[in-house]
Length: 136
View 1: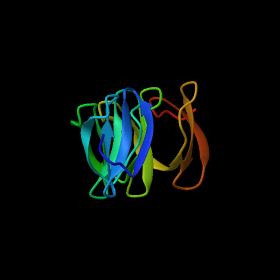
View 2: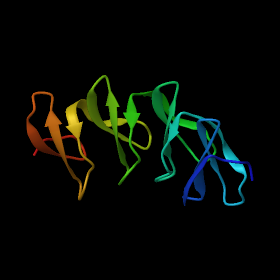
View 3: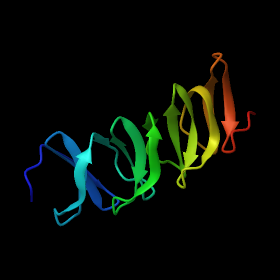
């Protein structure tokens, strides 16, 4: 196994590793499954990992294929099929296909739990939305 500076725990069969200030993933045999070329990576959840490349976030699958384009300022890990995203200081949610299922119109969003999420509008108003972005 290569000499890595940092190694995370395994998640969905792959572990994040750092080499020369860049991140990638190894498999359980210790082989580099995805090259260390990303500035930051998050663990695989629901088959995808959020990664940063050239100051933008996107998502890759377990083969390293880009599934969600590198266009966001941030993407969280997927939970219950959705990930929170940020672009130009506005937040919303995408699904695992990269579709924006909750528009990027919020100042802050919190993870969905039991199909509901608390969000803060750009005007500072707290509200609750469902998985389709409808305010309740």
